[in-house]
Length: 176
Image: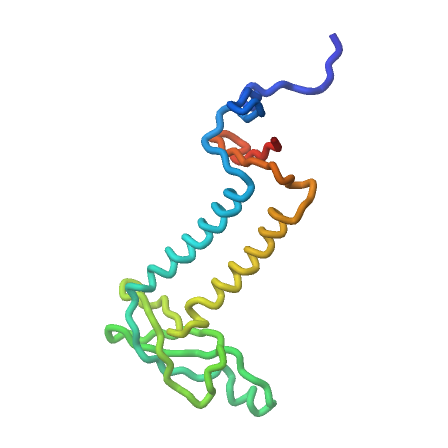
C-alpha cells in the first residue's frame, strides 16, 4: 500500500456533537468567539486589578525630588524628563527615579506610595503613575484584539469556537 505521508492522531479524533456539528475530543471547555474575547479581556483586567490591589496596602509619604541633570538640561533649554526622589522609611533612605509627568521643576516635594513590607518599591501617588499606563496598554490591547476578533476575515470566521484541552495544542479553533 502506498504511503501518503499523513498520520492519524488519536488524541485529536473528531467526534459527533449534540447539534450534529463536530468537536475535538478531550476538550475541557468550549467558547464562542465573543466569549473568548471577553475571557481574554477579563483576564487582563483581573491581572491589572490584582497588581493594583497590592498598592491598597501601601503607605504614603513625602519625598524630596529634583530633576535628573536638571541644571544642565535647563541651560540648554531642554526639558528634563526624569525625576530623582529620595524618601525615608524606618530610618533608611531610599532613592528612586520616575518620569516627570508634568511635575513643576520648582516643586521639590511629591507624595509617593511605598510597600510597607518592601519599601524600596515605590511610585508617585498620582493618577498618571497609578493608572494611566495600564489604561493605555489595555486600550491598545483592546483595539488590536477587537480588530482580530470582529473584523470579518477568513482567519477567524464568524462561527469560530475555541476549545481548551489538557494536551498540546492547548487552544484549538474549530469552525462550525
